[in-house]
Length: 181
Image (cartoon, rainbow, N blue to C red; front, side, top):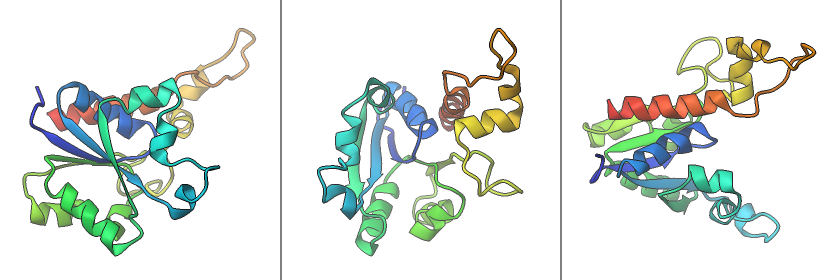
């Protein structure tokens, strides 16, 4: 269904990889841009993101069918390479807090100016504006804010955490659906 579609994935955490995993499962070529950090690659104690991904079924599953490249987005050269890659993509997915992609020169306005047909998906917990837009939207936070967490109780009525990151999965599924639409 998505054969011939190229997706460049700048996302972090679970919703973005779930989204792009689904697009890859539908035939898209997904290129994940991992943030290169000199201190992580300089020490064997801290494996690179690529090496860390090779362990753990959970991580392997959500990153399946992804190609990856590690770029240092703190340098002009890394930003330029990331932009060159993104401007050739059909779809760009990111999950940074609002303003980060603009700081990197990879925001929708700049990419659209170079490639008006690009589909740009920005995954955030609380949107691009509003009272909470700069807050991290991790699964536990979203479940709490939505009221879902208050519904989960053990047999004695004590609140418990969900074993499955439902909000993260739902957001990833919703994002892939909207990209396909």
